[in-house]
Image (spheres, rainbow, N blue to C red):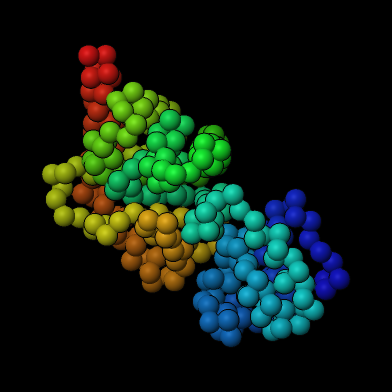
Amino acid sequence: MAGKNLDPSSSPRALLGAELRVARERAGLSQAELGEPLFVSGSFIGQLEAGTRRMHIEFARQIDDILGTDGFFARNCGALAKSKYPNHFAEAAEAEAEAKTIREYAPLALPGMLQTEAYAREVFVAYQPTATEEVIAELVANRLDRAKLLSDPTTPLFWCVLDETVLRRTVGGRTVMAEALRHITALIRKRRIFVQVLPFSAGAHSSMGGTLKLMTFDAAPPLAYAQGNAIGVLLDDPATVTRHSLTYDLLTASALSPTQSLAVIESAAEDYEHDQHS
C-alpha cells in the first residue's frame, strides 16, 4: 500500500477510508485504540473509514506514524483538501452527500437544500454585500448543486422544522418569497420531504440557541452540525449527538403537524402572491 496513490476521481474520501480500515485492522487496533493517541473518539475514526468525514493532513501524518504506512495517508489526503464550499461548512456538505437521513431546524432562513435560485442569491448578497457578481453566481450555483440530492426519489430522507420567522421574513421581495414557498410545497406534495412549521405561539422551545442539523448513515455513526455566522461545528460524540436528537424530537413535538404546516406554508405563499398582484 505504501507505494500506491489513490485516484482522486474515484471518491477519494471513501477510498482513503477503506484503506484506513484495512491498515488499522492489520495493525490489530480497534477504532477507539487508534483514536486515543490522536485525541479523537472511536466514532471519529469510524467516520473517516466510512468516508463521511475528511482526513486532515495533521491526522494523516500521525496515522502514518502509528500504523507504519510510510506516508501513504499524508500523500493522499491532499485529494480531499479541495472543496467548493466554505471551510466551516465543507465537511458538513460532504457528509450530507453520504447521509441516509437529514433532519434540520431552520430558525431564520430556508435551508440551503430547499432554496430557489432567486432566494439563494438574495441570501448571499446579504451575507457578502461587497462580493463580485462572479463570486455570488458561484455561491448560488454550488448551493443549487447541493439541492440535487433531492432529485433522488427517496434518499436521503429529509425532514425539516421551519420556524415561523422563516415564512414571515420577506427575503428578496414578495415574488421571490412566493416562488420559494411554492417550491417547498411542491416537494411536500410529491412526498419528497417532510416539513413542520414551528409557530410563534409555541413560545420557548428546545432549540432557541440556533440552527441544528442531524445526519445518519448506513455504515457510520450519526453526526450533528451546529452553525452560526461563518462558523460551523460537526459533532460526532455519541452523547452530544443523542442530546441534539432529543432537542430535535422536542421541536417536532412543539411544531404543527405536517398537514397543518403545509396549509400554513401555502397560505403564506398565497399572501405573497396576492400582495404581489396588488
